[in-house]
Image 1 (cartoon, helix red, strand yellow):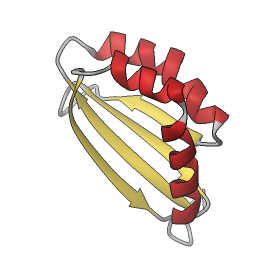
Image 2 (cartoon, rainbow, N blue to C red; image 1 turned 90 degrees about the horizontal axis):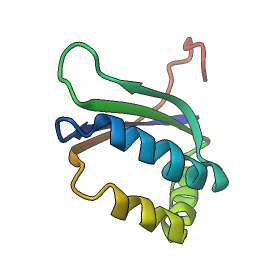
Image 3 (spheres, one colour; image 1 turned 30 degrees about the vertical axis):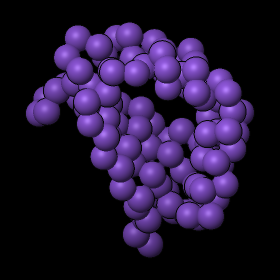
Image 4 (tube, one colour; image 1 turned 180 degrees about the vertical axis):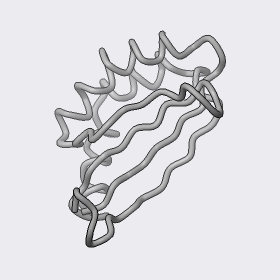
Length: 104
């Protein structure tokens, strides 16, 4: 198993609208193509205006296959258009759990 950890820094005062659009438009597309959400978090202390989401995959090949299917979905393009200009910066890491991790 691997986990795709994505951190997006949003434009100030765009958090509520971004979350609304993500839940209504992006999440259904991602779930339709088999992407498994492990958690979705908003920063409260430290760097503000950030969302961190974690996605579970079986392997890098699984990640590539599911994301390619998502990217080809016209509804994904609609979500990207709706949120254009809301994301200031993106950071992502692909992590694998240690043998003693509760989820592995």
